[in-house]
Image (cartoon, rainbow over all chains, first blue to last red; front, side, top):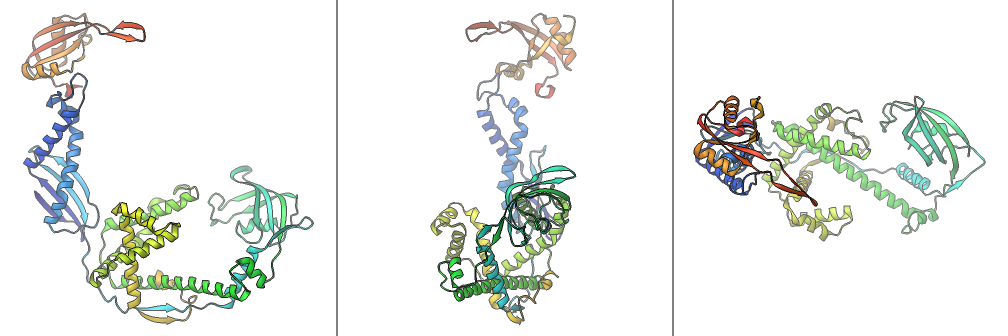
Length: 441
Length: 95
């Protein structure tokens, strides 16, 4: 086996591998023999097709198969022989059977970047202090109150903010009815801004049974792209107006919210705890972001372009997926694929580099995912999907491939937890005042 | 047989034909049943860059085929064994 390695860029290698005639011809012969045994051609009995005819009919197919097999058989020993540590699957190109009986192919690979870890212990990061104000609790209570409020139909007055209106509507754009913009018995929370503030505004003042046409101009940034930036005329019929009977904030209300709350004070404590937890989680996330940011600042080394490209692809895929849930694809949402890729490239590069740094730290600190971590991870998945832990285990037990990204995730979490523990925390005044601007920079 | 292009109907790709091509450089064609050995020789020399030594022919009966209760026959055809004196014909390349 003849291996030639060319260094194209810092991390990109072009490997040309040439295999000797003996091995190649042996493989080819075996492949042709197999075809000759099995093939059925008109005019010939099975297994009696002469070699020349087989050659003429199946050469391309057989050569492609043999080429793939040869590549698989030799690629790994080739990189081992050259002591190359590739990060992604190689791009195999130019597989060629030469006239002298040898076979050669070119593999393009990226190697792992070599770098020295800079200080990753005792990173100075600002830790936000979690503060929950009374207003936040009050706001939470208020929204609970609105949620819990029973609805009562009112016939004799027009819609005011805070009412729920049941309407039939049909949207027209340029006098043409819009198929997607039509609904019957649709409940609108007037004044909540949940549907569209502009639309809800127009409903105010209408009465039960009233019909009207309203023109609504949607802002260009409206989340639904069918409506965004368009002037739509709505034909609206109000079928029912319901007002909210806001309950009093007392112990009775607390019991209505959940039987486990005995008094309003108890409910308040629960809400307080919940907000604290949310904020702490966010603070933890922020902290991780800051640590990663510091690490990325300290380490600048080139990363394999193929990994970055892969990461960008993944990001685009996830964008596509989220669009799909809204019944859209990239095109109809007006997103240019190349632009999206370009925009995501920097983030992708950071992710790839961050991953390398984390892995290196794990290596140096001998952080590994053990049974215990796995069990915890399984339990989390189980909680998420409402499955018993045993079932999750069974699901992953079958194939090792599925589990790899999951193990990777657990490992990353563990490393980050280690870094958080090692980091020097500087108290920051408040969650709110510590915005994410330094992270973005 | 006015037109040489009406003579040869196609190659006869069978075990027997493949064997004879390898051993005796004989090519087997399905030909128009109305054609004779001379016409076949002219047609082969016209269409392929080869020299024909001689031609043997055989009249083949169409097989009896059945469609439900009706029986019928496939067309009769003529098979020509063309022995080449010069050059070769490789059908995989020609067709």
